[in-house]
Amino acid sequence: MANDLPEGAPVMLRMSVERENGYLSWLGVQMGDIEYGEANLTIPFDERFTDKEADPPKIHDGIVTTLVEQTTELAIRTTMPDPVNDRVDLLSTTVNFLDDAAHDLEATANVVDTRGGSAVAEATVESRDSQGTPLTVASGQGVFRID
Picture 1 (tube, rainbow, N blue to C red):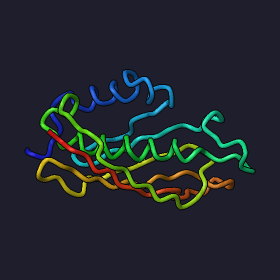
Picture 2: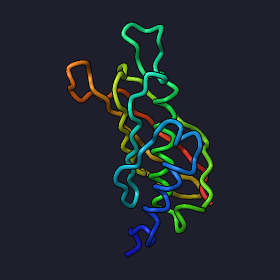
Picture 3: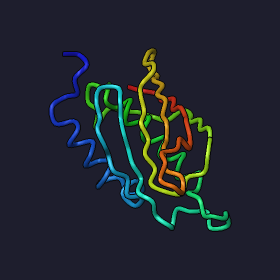
């Protein structure tokens, strides 16, 4: 079927995200479920990622932005003939910060368009409030050049 991931692609993508990419592995990024056109990544809470000047400390917006960019890229990669090796270059990332994050971050992204050598995916980032209730902390979009 045209909308299936190539055999072995989920395992190779997981290794790339969680172990081989120095920056993402330093952040502790974990890949959740992926399907054609969809991706899920999590960054576990780490006090090093907080803006300690905020009271209470909150996760730095740069960490949230990184998660949006990486999750949208991964979603787009799932639509590529060779998801691991095909070229995907970031053109722009837009992030709307909706609330502060102070716990684990989980992003889910969906591809909304691919054509003419470019692709667009949208993402939502969730965390929890101080009572443990799920909370949407950001939404965003990644635009990529694809080959």
